[in-house]
Length: 570
Ligand code: NOJ
Ligand code: MG
Image (cartoon, rainbow, N blue to C red):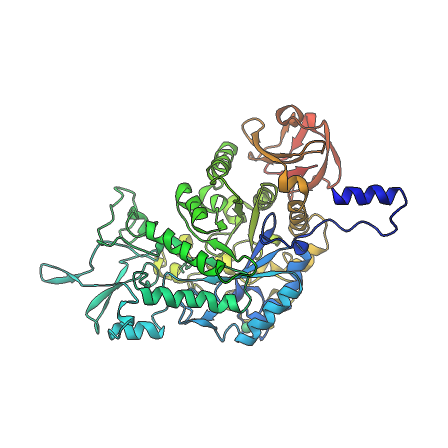
């Protein structure tokens, strides 16, 4: 309104200064800075190596902050940077309040935070409360039964069957095999829902709960803007330690956690109540509201339930794990509509995750030709988009052989299954340019091999083209900040069997329309009739490989969509 008034005055010659630029994420001053923005996940080992040891680090992230500013990202979430033996590359923490030397020092962290803040970028840290490293000093004390540490982990006596020692129950680790590990010294088993070297912390201990609150406050006091909480559903287990039901005949090997129905090791009510305590701890500090993102691979009702316990962003993983290249346009429509209609009433905001460091890259999940379609959906749908480093240039899974495999999940799956389970391929170094190690490191040896396609596929190259993944993504971030995308109505409509579309409308405005061709063949469709949109519209962006000219005007009554293409019209 104010802006419109200014324009009127300006046209009337009253005002001599030009009206202010449209709001960008960086000028939002309200408490919920994340609304209608893109948040960017940095996997620090793979982003930028500043000291030539072949592993990315904090100074590397600081060096590259302008890349995020260029894209108009609102905040970055850093995967763990804390002291760690790196069995799970930082998700096994041996000191929750210090920085691992691979990544730098606490001074480097302070430098990064202030450099980010001075650019209007928010910093989100990974908080990993479900487990620590077995090298955390607490664990050594717990083994020795020193109070109160004796109770910091989940310990249980063995079950003796026919005179032999067996784990207390049938629970399986996410990384394969029994979730219980025998400890000779304490003569008990400890629970590890993830790697053997990641013992589960026991949130029934009030002292442990306090320690973890202190860890949150330590970083909040150092100016971080929020937290992504790791493995949230696993925080509490059944107090009776009952066996989990076996899913019959699913053809998997018996050590595979997918053979069990995880009703006793996940999603317990106490877990939700625990989240609420962290919300309260952060809120009662005062100051700008801290964002809480929750990582929960759970059913839709159990995911959206986190909204009511203090989460701002319970990750919506539908595009990551819910849908794949076999899903139809109708499957997409159903999933999107279900999410939207299941969000609790109130001041809650949707979110859409493009990708992360635990799943094959978008191009591997949906096909190289379709790697822009997921970012387009996440941009046009109302709410927050979450993107993983490399997605903005359509990075592909890197080839990593069994001998080069370093991911604990890949290693424990073994040589026959590692291709299916290893997370190394989505973690290969960021491809900045076509110099040594893709500009990621001055070292030719990097912790994971650089994808050999980097010579042509890199950020510097993509910056040269207005129709590259990078240029498309930049325009998608801009799209998110438009009033029609922030507050317009949103409909997911099928135009025939194979065309999915999202239409955003606002009274008296040209709609913004996404169309995705789910078939691999070219389709001509009367989009004007199916979607009730103008007869001719502009191409805002079109997917790489579609050969549709940006800015061209298309007749929507006979819109021709090449196979696998996606485009946004306005
Ligand atoms: C989820 C993290 O994203 C993943 O990388 C990690 O292995 C597990 N949680 C365990 O912390
Ligand atoms: Mg380094």
